[in-house]
Image: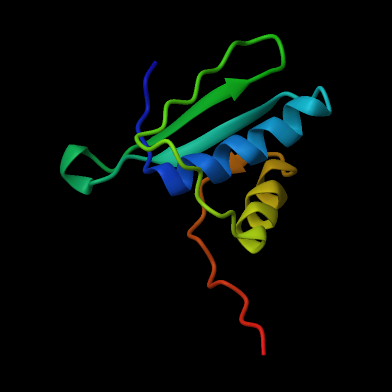
Length: 95
């Protein structure tokens, strides 16, 4: 199965997935089809440490990770429904 996400989203998903797999935890990953022109169905796959995964990025340079987004993704991953692609929260401001 091949699923496409923009590089920024993919980098955050990869980090969240890696954290779960480092703890030897299996989980579901759920997302909705975008754009809605292809359907608005929901997809879910089972991810487990024994299942090989591949992440292919469009660019060579990794984006800066938004810690708040990564934490939000991990919160969903620790529920009974599993990792769900949630919108990126605003970056925290300093000052």
